[in-house]
Length: 334
Image 1 (cartoon, helix red, strand yellow):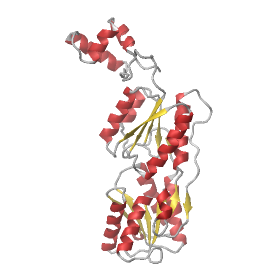
Image 2 (cartoon, rainbow, N blue to C red):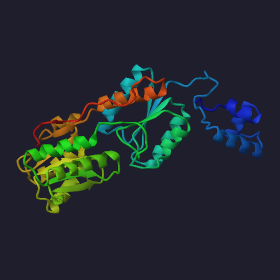
Image 3 (tube, helix red, strand yellow):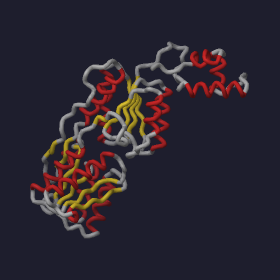
Image 4 (cartoon, rainbow, N blue to C red):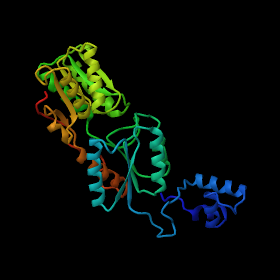
């Protein structure tokens, strides 16, 4: 469906495009009553202003919007590399927005991207909200969109993501196969679908191996960072954790756990095994090199663009994401 233009609004009311422009930009020369009528009609027609100006070419640049939590994160940097490479090959540029896990910022960014007349949006939503205003805006404006890495409620549409629950099961079984029984899962407090999936995978693997609930310990760090992981690991030790293994939500938190264990004189892996998740480039140069679950960031980014472009164009017969399964990268920490 084409988006409404100034001409559409003008013709529906019987005024000029110039009058509509004045009304929508709160410029003088339009009565209050007519201004209100024009604004209501613009809202009814789902009009979004084109910040590039309709008078230049009548066409918007071929642009995709990407809304993520933090592009300084090593994980999202790798996602973005795949996204940009795939978008550029198809003749699209990419506009990147960071939410910093703030739902209000996410909604603002979605509106800004709509105003830029982007052709499609890739969104990694904040939290696990069943009601996502940003998605409702994209639906209302008929802007094609695909979720990347995270879901937002049970009916949020296509999500291009590896199986985080399966990856967590792999990590937990890896530790159980090596004789560990009391295992600490260091996760984070962000209420995202990824956090939920990995925690469920950890607990499921423990139950399936007959481990008691008390042997599956979950602690949530305040943030996804080395310092936060270190602080939470120190807290677990101070609270009397007597286990022999740690499964960290991701590699950054795992690095924090390694730092804390080093500070307490606990040898890795002799006294405590540590396994991470993501396999970011720094994992192989940590001390000791980190055993972790490999996540195919680049492939997820490329596949997300393919799925989005498929939604934007005519049916191709293949719209479901196709991604490799996660796997363990064995190094020296576990």
